[in-house]
Length: 168
Image (cartoon, rainbow, N blue to C red; front, top):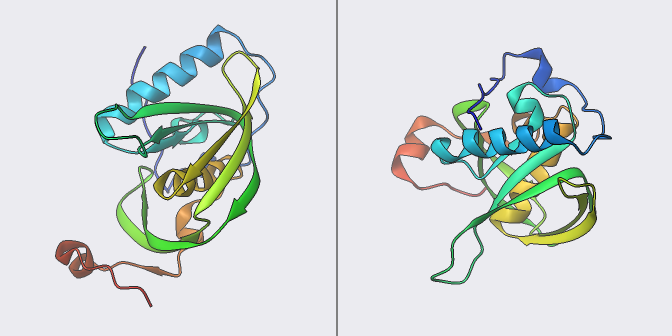
């Protein structure tokens, strides 16, 4: 397992559409393991393969909606697609590929995703709140979409420092 470099917004690869994963093999397993190793020290909640320079449809998302006393855990999504969404949330969003910048983005409050696991088995998973936001954000990356293109407005340094993120 190893940490990989995270591409930043200046890198053209971040804006390319990813190809589906067709080989569920040791290379895919290594990619997913490396993505987990890369995400953890960054204190992020999600990472998509194109962010580490691999144009394949694979993401990892940290499930933070866990009962008290239980550990958060990673959800691996290969070839994910959103099959249902409901509600709305509006809040600050950032990205490891756009360090230090945050913007106000509307996302669904609840999302259901159909994906494959690292061995190619299909499954469905639901997310709410931050997890739903992260599913949408990371799946956007697979289509070459960075959150800044969905922001209604970017946040100023003063807003970030004050912790008061005003909805408009």
